[in-house]
Length: 83
Image (tube, one colour):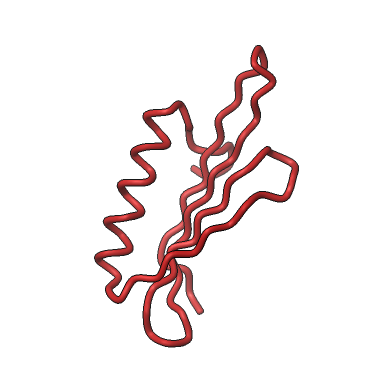
């Protein structure tokens, strides 16, 4: 199944010993709805995962945009290599 959208963000602050990642991806499920997958944690470690289901792709996209904006306001930036 193709992934509709992926956003990979990092927040690194050596002075605070902070190295975090946050990944958002939207993928169709086997049942026709859209899974918005959130992954977060410390870089280099397995993170936590949350999956939210949406009936429409537009709803999943709107939720992804809201979450991404919130993370960027908190200092997250595009991960290196994610052009």
